[in-house]
Length: 266
Ligand SMILES: C[S@@+](CC[C@H](N)C(=O)[O-])C[C@H]1O[C@@H](n2cnc3c(N)ncnc32)[C@H](O)[C@@H]1O
Image (cartoon, rainbow, N blue to C red; front, side, top):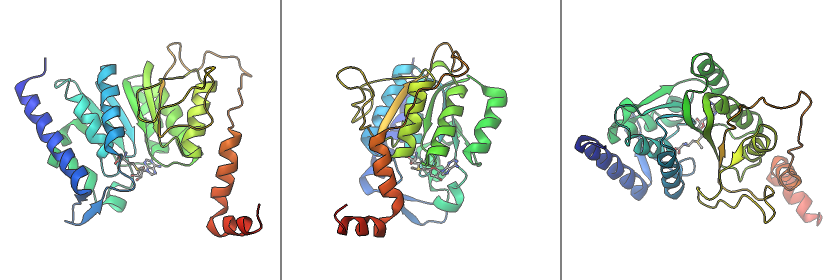
């Protein structure tokens, strides 16, 4: 049962969150104001994330990409359901240099700094290090760090091993090619299943159950109960999305090249 003290903490957290979204800014450790846009998680996504964690009954959560800590606050909101056991681990090597510790300050103001362990390392160092001692110990992980395919894939791959079999890995920004292809690889090759309908704009499966070419902002995957490695040695399902590759190629060309191509009518 949730105690009165916890209700009070949750009220403080929610008031803080509401005020942050209302003014669109956070104050960093140097007293400087920082806009929550564009990197901060929108409120609707954060609420959906909180509800998913609550529905899963998750108590051990993990996140790559703390930034201004908006997703972290929503995760902490869900963890307050378990006042004695909820714990969150958030990885971000740029918290001080890029955000002036505004995310950590915000957690402090919301009264949840004690719930969160911040790992000040790049995910490609932090996640394998966590795997040494904490394989399968997490119930839930959010991947919202660097969005190139290589990082998104490595983050998701390590996270799915840090999460228990049957746990949940959410990739944010699967409208972008890197996270989307990483999610496709996990779904098509590593036995993860898409959890439909829990996150905003989730329209993942076509009429015949196939993966959609247009993916939503966030994608929730359930990790396989039998583990990721119950497959043949030479198993491989192509996961490339032709629709993504055309858009990604155009995006990679840069604006001026796109304009040149556009002016030639290509
Ligand atoms: C889109 S922001 C995260 C937003 C955050 N989840 C929120 O809702 O406020 C992406 C974050 O990933 C972090 N990041 C970039 N490269 C990273 C890496 N190699 N390891 C961990 N985090 C990384 C950046 O510092 C940035 O804070």
